[in-house]
Length: 251
Image 1: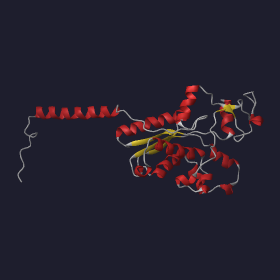
Image 2: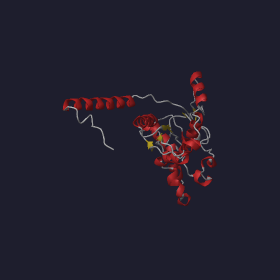
Image 3: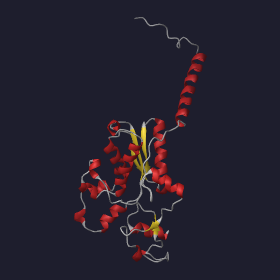
Image 4: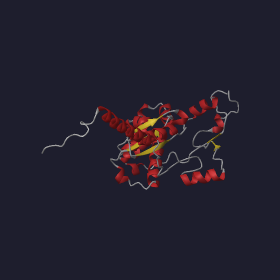
C-alpha cells in the first residue's frame, strides 16, 4: 500500500523547529505536573507509647495525655541502673521513657514465619510486619490482589539492640541461620515486600531521627517518577538494651 506524504518532512526548517519546541514544552509541562501531583494517603497503622492504633493516638493527642512512664520491669532494673548524677559511670540519669507494650508478642503463623525463626527476629521487624498489615487493612487493600503489584516499601529503621542482646549472652551455640536475616536492616524492608508479594522498590533508610520522614519523602518521589503505583512508607524504632540508653543519657 502506498503511503501518503510525510507532512512534517515537507515543512520548512522553521516550522519543524517550532513543532519540536511545542513538543518539548508539552513534555516539560507534564514533568512539572508529575512533580507536584497530589498523593493520597489511603491507610494508616501505628504503634506509639499509650496508643496501639491511629484512633487511640488521635484521642491521646486530643486529651493531652502524657504517655511517658517509668521504665517497666521487663526492660531492665531501673532501680539498680538509675543515678541522678549524669556523670555516674554505667548509670542512666532518668527513670522515664516512652515504651510500647507487648514488643515480645508476635503471631508468626499469620505471616508464614516459623516460631523458631520468630525468636531471633528483631521486634522491629515484627512490628513493621504487624503495622504494615494493619495499614493495608485500614486502606481496604485486598492482600491477594497486591501480590505482583508495583507497590514500594520505604522503611526507616536504625536501632540494632536485639542483635546486641543475643551477642551479649556470649553463647555462640544460640546463633542460627535466622539471626542474620532477623536482625538485618535491609531484610526488614525486604521481608515486607516478600510477605506481601510486592514488586516495587524496597529499601530501608537510616538517617537517625529523620528516618521515617525521609522514607516518606522517598516514597513520594518514587510515586511521582512512576517507579511504583502505591507505597508503604514509615518507620520503626525500639530501644531494648540498656547500653544505648546509658549512652544517650550521657549525651
